[in-house]
Length: 115
Length: 259
Ligand SMILES: Nc1ncnc2c1ncn2[C@@H]1O[C@H](COP(=O)(O)OP(=O)(O)OP(=O)(O)O)[C@@H](O)[C@H]1O
Ligand SMILES: [Mg+2]
Image (cartoon, rainbow over all chains, first blue to last red; front, side, top):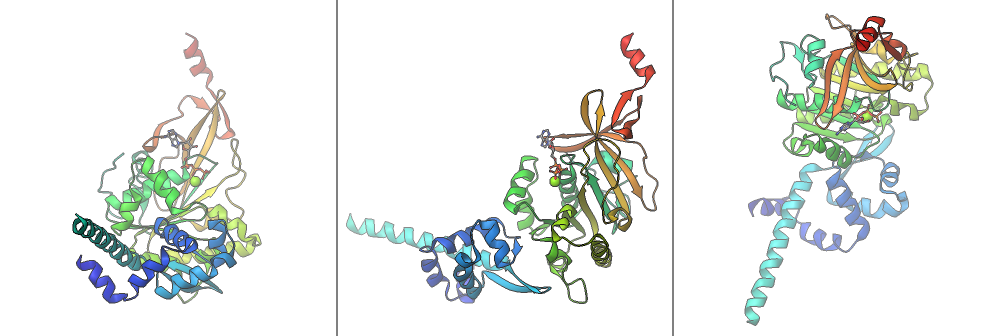
């Protein structure tokens, strides 16, 4: 999948990210939330309200999203808001699609080896 | 419900054929329009029609909401046959879900989130649903008026045709006032959506209260909301006192019913 290769080129950490992500409930919740609601622009506090949790419970996971670039911090007036990076999402999805395919291929060939 | 893709020059189709007709072809491009109405009268539906008409006319829309999450709006729009999500993926629509202070912020020299979104999709249309949420900012009325006046000026500079919605608390009866902040004076056009009690039944009605620079239909017309959205029907000919909230058929009409 050429898009995925391109994406990996731009974000060499995607593979590592994918593995860590799937093990963390909060991160997964945030990723899914923004995937379904890419237009949400909120402060950390506002986001916590929308997700029915507290800012403290989100803080670390949000920081990780920001560090890999899936969320961007932006200054609006005197507040800092979180904005979803839609391009990054495309990259992320292309990568995940390829990763899943690869794992399925690996599984299949393992099965074939056993036969 | 499809509307003729070609609007008269300089006009932006509202997406509702009957309303386009009342306005002689649609809103004026670049104007600010206030859709004021009682709860459940179709303000959001009209905003979605306007967005859909923008897709048809190749005029991308930025659609701003406060309360509802995008996923709820995708779902509600989908039920009426509008695939907002795919329009958004095609860059024809951009949904923003934020708080009113974010919309007001950076109204000075630096561009705000509205400008960002408008630039990102090359928007020609903007919907803000609804201004009622600005109440939660807890500002004094005069301060709010100043802020909103600034916002409307910003939108004019951007050249987008804007639809803002606002709730009127009264269900029936004459609208005492449209907004505490004088929103009706800050916009070019005001569309009023009201309930009318018509011999024991609540029906929805639409009126073009103000249309700067253009002739328009001055009558109240019946509004139907259904599975495919809003349609605007006949006027209330033969019915008296429509604006008092509790309307009756004229004596002649009632007599006709008896014969
Ligand atoms: N499928 C349908 N069939 C009939 N009526 C419908 C249908 N879908 C929606 N409606 C009507 O539309 C109304 C809601 O329309 P809409 O949400 O546009 O109104 P609104 O003015 O934005 O409301 P609010 O004050 O809650 O923001 C409902 O109250 C209902 O009467
Ligand atoms: Mg509404």
